[in-house]
Image 1 (spheres, rainbow, N blue to C red):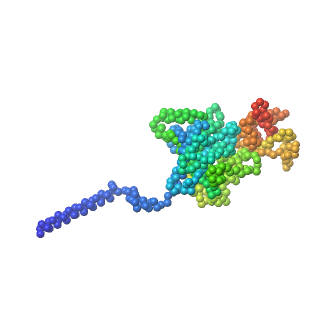
Image 2: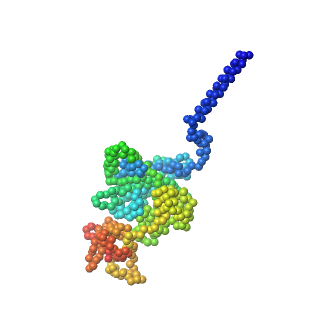
Image 3: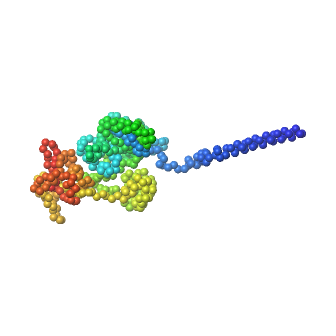
Length: 504
């Protein structure tokens, strides 16, 4: 009996020891050294709860990605936008990649989309004078285009189109499911748009922008899908290679600490997402991709003379007042407010302001907009909402004198009477708005308004006392009285094919 009792004690002590050991293990697992809240949140039960939360649409991948096969500059600081050098007229590949995940944008599966590639100005100042800049380039380079497609080298593009009135844009259809590469050629160089002062020139940067659209209910490619762009500079042939080499040599001379402030050079340039270009896209009006595409005709102005003051990317000289077309009205509905945001390149905020009417948006203060949109976009949105038409520095009224008509010789009609030429037809004057008080601006605006080839204008003279011809200089323009009236005639220059303009 004693032996049995002893065995029971041994067994009992062993069980107690095992139980204590198991408790000590639990203590170690839940000890401070092995326990953290992140481990608890990583448990499956919490993962299931997190997955049930709605995902922000901003985290979605863009439907497309565009990659240009050209190296970026190594002389670009961290957090700055990449800069890519291109050679004038050289073909560069832009790969059009389908970046959709399964189930993303299912309405374009098995269908074609349309992309418009543009070369536009990077600087805001030049964007506002884009119309005049491109007109001047066109007169200096008759018959040339700023941007072309190298069709023989391109792959997968269909129905390529170039509009004669849009020298800086090309468009085409393509199938996202197939390999697509568009080879572009940029013919304008960066120094063509810089003022030539003190013998030195610094080229302006451009942007390559790609806007992609899907078909709407009417079969027109006007529903915006995606936009992306990159910053470039264009040099004369071989100039981009020399510039890239120079930048690389400069970076090699810097210390290791200085190099850390710059981003490395990449073999290709990835276009980053941006707002769509504000122009209304031209439309393919047929559902059939094989049908010949047609460009939507711009609205016809009641005046046959183009608006000499149209300058911004949002204002294309369509005869509509800039104030009425761009100013957001307090009576604007939520839908009209959304359209205004898109037109003025605030597409990233359309969802945020989806329930705002015009009055709601106009009530926001500058501080409110900066807090909502950040400093840069907030100030830009505030300025757009409060925009006022900028008065020109000088306004003059000009009428072209017809051959054989009796000249007014500077005589102005009496108040309430209309001036007439010898045939009884009234003289019709056109307003010329000058943003720069220089003689070249007068010649350029006269060429634009009266359809005179700018490159054919040799000199502009003003008829003085006894009929003498005085050369119009910058100083003379600066001394013009505001709202002065002029008749002008043209005189052909012998042996040169050019013309002189004489203001009377």
